[in-house]
Amino acid sequence: MTPEFEVAHQRLVAACTGRSWRDKDEDPEHPETIQAMQLALNMPKSNPPSRIEMLESAARAVVAVCLDDRAGADGAFAEALAEWYGHRIRKVARRARNKAWDDVQALPGVTVNNQARAFAPSAVQDVHPLIAKLQIGHTDIAPEEVGTPRSDAPVIYVDNTLEMTAGKAAAQVGHGSMLYAASLTAEQAWQWAQEEYALSVREVPREVFNQALSQPDAVVIRDAGYTEVAPDSATVVTVSAPLP
Image (cartoon, rainbow, N blue to C red; front, side, top):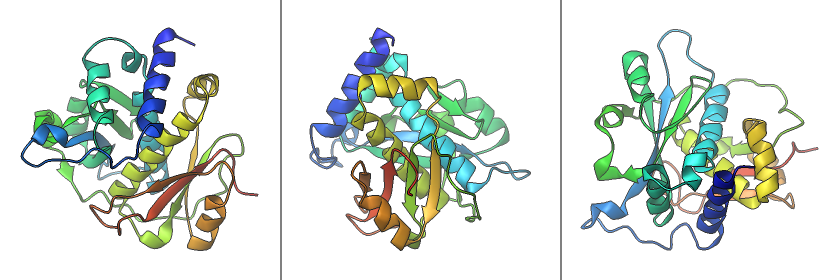
């Protein structure tokens, strides 16, 4: 384990366990208080990824940013995360394709499977112009039939009765992977990192979702209700292994 990784994990744990996600109020008169991690979803017109592939890539990209060695070192990357951790933990998903997707690869962040890139957070007023021109919305991909989740990795279950768009769901599974990493010891998180944050995402009916909620190790995300779902809705739950 690198020293930087250990520090990054300590910072993530402190951010996720030391307070409620809503303790820090946002003030429209002080735009710097409205912070967000931007997510770019690569959605080419020809041969786009499946919805599940994109959600899994988004979840992995988010946790990879939070536990990147840059997050545990001195510098702008760590400072950006620290500022975000001190406010409400927002994520904003945007559609990218072709040159626009290629252009944002140079900005600080992590890309997974050439499908999703999570960036170092910023105040929403300071989003880089190359990211800002990516469209919020129009990120939907229809759900599809998928197989059983992999047996050797955590699973993020999504309540499909909420009918979230793919962009909204990408932000929620990003919350799920991030808080799951914070529930691990540093050694466990490091081992997960060596597996490139392998995970499965499955969108399931409420009955199955409730089974996941009841698991002893469940990490539950409840949404603030700014978009698409009612406040305090349980949107995703992460467990360390598939449901029996």
